[in-house]
Length: 368
Image 1: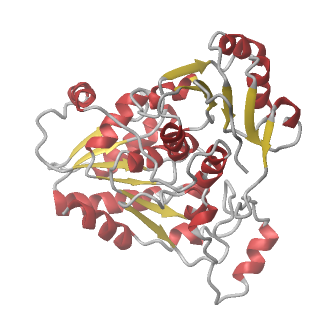
Image 2 (image 1 turned 90 degrees about the horizontal axis):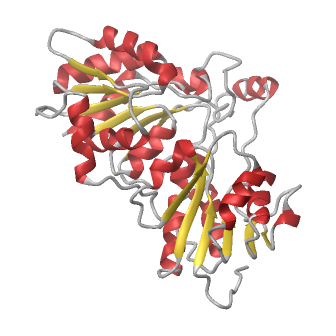
């Protein structure tokens, strides 16, 4: 049910989400909000680590960030200066609702959840199509695999997480029709990162490799498979590799680079060495990104870069780049997938059954 506001809000605060991949999935809702309120000043409140994501985004006029050490009262004081008419709270946490309550914003809209409804002036009921991710137990997994042959069920596109954010925007009478997630990098932003990593004069295909995943090993296609796929792709394309990852991925990425490297190869390990805007710029220039299910996967797809993604413990129907036209999503027939576990309690068949050959063919089909 949508909420009618009189007068039309002139200053809107969106309390953004806290994780990179989730933030990318909110962009359709922000674009629909901009479509509904074209003249409004729309500010977004996000953790400092995500502030750069929203620079130059057409849905947003202002980015407000907070540090990990900022308490709710400090955030509330910061927001009071904005004199916002309306707050749209995208996270489901009690804290996010309390922040806009303490800011004194008169209209506060968010999903109905325990311990926070009193801080909102309008609570939005869950969608009928919403699907909650639930970790399978080891016993469930063993039962599922004992029932072979079977096939894992596929959820409809309407179950995807981005619909949760669109549902909130629709409470403000914005369109609930989905859009592909979209991010933007200006051409002039690309030159400095290219120079920083010695890519200015490259005339070969640049292919990205993102073999990490913060959530846990169950989301990671085996490192030896990444290496074997990269060696084959290198031989057939004469590409330049960019290895992506966070600071904790620097040493594993260097070991992977050493395993891939041959006399003809060019590899740049940029793990842990980029700002978020630099990461976006480098992902933008990749012909394709071979990646696990991670935040950079979402960023690349939203920038229009083709992605090839082996999925195992997680569900692309819930959180994958299924609305991006250039995403190749690879799954096995493992009946226990998705389990949503950090570590596999059995034999990791969901990922091991995705072959190197299949991945190489998916990558090569995008290189041309």
